[in-house]
Length: 517
Image (cartoon, rainbow, N blue to C red; front, side, top):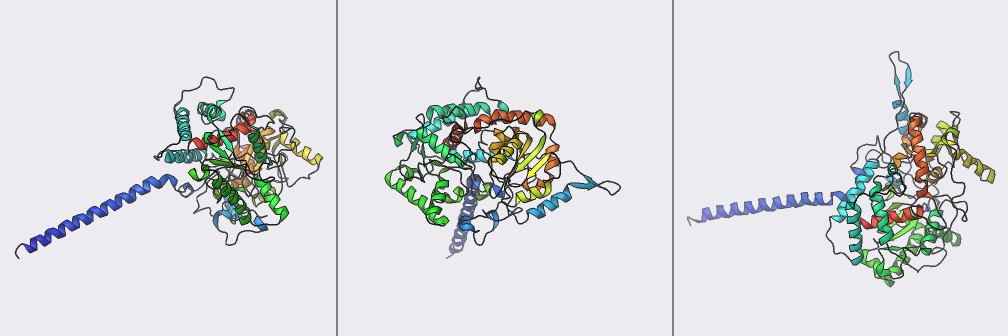
C-alpha cells in the first residue's frame, strides 16, 4: 500500500508527458500542412491593395472586380450575384476619389493639377505566381509515364540549357528571357506530339469559323487539324490531346435550334467528354489534365469550367477574377479577321512622325467602363479622339483603320469582358496598345515582356488617362512603337503557319504549361 501513491504519481507524470508529446506533434503537423499547401492558396487574397498593378485586386478592398455579361446567359444576370461576377458598383466612387487625389492646393489655396507618372504593372507578380505554381507541381513525387519522362527531360534542358548564340533575329527586350524561350520553342518543335479526337459532329466540332472577332479559335482548329509536324495518329505517342470544338458554334447553333440554358450547353460538353472517357483510357488517366481546348467566345470560361475544368484552356476571356488560372490556362489572342483568304490584310501603319492623333478609341458602350471613358474624354482635347460605336458600313470601317494607323496610342478598354480584339489590332496597325482592364492576362505573358511595348492603366485611373499618357517621354514612346512592330510577327495568322507566328505561339503556351504540369 505504501508504494501505491508514488506509482500513481509516476503514471500521471507519464500520461502528462505523452499528452504534451501528442499536442506538440499535432501543432507540428498543422504547421507543416500550412507550409505544404501554401503554393495552392488563392494569391489574390495575399497581395497588398492595388496601387501599381493591373491584374489582381485584393478581394477585401475591391469586392466588385468584374461584371457579369449584361447580355447574359439567357439574357439575365445570375441571382444572388456577389463579388467577382457582379457589376462595378463602386467604380464611380473610386473615380471620384481618384479625382480628389489627382489635385493639390498651393500656398495661396489655389487648386493645382498634379502630373501623373505611368504606374508600373504587376508582371513581376504574375511571373512569381507562375514560378510558385511550377515549383509546387514539381515538388510532388509521382510515377512518370514514357511521355511524362520526355517532358521532364525537356524541362531540364529548358531550365539548365546553355545560352544560345543565335537569337533567330528576335530582339531580347521583348522577352523575359529570350534564350530560355528559344530553348523551349526548339524543344517543342522537336518533341511535342498532339492527338486530335475524331469524335464530335459538325458544326460544333471540326467546323472552324474563320472570320469575325472570335476567329482565333477557328484558325487554330483549322491549322491544327491540317498539321503534320505535331499531330500523331497513335494517341499513345501523344503528350497532349486536343478537343476540337468551337465555343462560338456551340453557342450559336444551340441558340438557333432551341434557346437553351447554360446548363444545357455544359451538359453537351459533359456528354462529349463522357464519350471520350468511355472510348479512350487517356482522359481517365489524368482526369483530362493533359488535354487542351482553344475557345474565344465570352461564355467559354464558364461553359468549360466543370466538364473541362482540369484541361489546359486557351481562352480569349482570360479573366483572373472569374477562374482563369495562371500556370494552367493560357490566353488566346482575340483577333478580328475580316478576310479568310487574307487574314493579315491591311497590316502596318504610318511612321511615328505621321501619327497626328495622340490617342484613339471607338467602340460600343459595353460594360460600365467605356461610358466613363467617353464621358471624360470625348471632345475634351483636339488630339485625343474618343468615340462611341462607329457605323458598320465599309467607309466607316476604313475610317476606323485610318484612325488606328494614324494614332500614337490606341485605347483598349474592356467591355463586358476583360479582353478586346483592339489589343491585337493595335499591334497589327503599329499603334502602342493602352490596356485598361484590371484582370486581363495578356497573351503569351509567360514569354513576352508586355511592358516593353504597351501601357497599362488602372480602370479607376481612366479620368487621368491624358496626363498619364502625356507623362511618357517621346523617347520612351518611340522605343515602344518600334517594339510593337517587332512583336507583330507573334500575332499574325498565315494560311500556312510560319515559325514564331500566332499559331505556334498559342501551341507553345500550351506546351509550356504541359511541360511544367
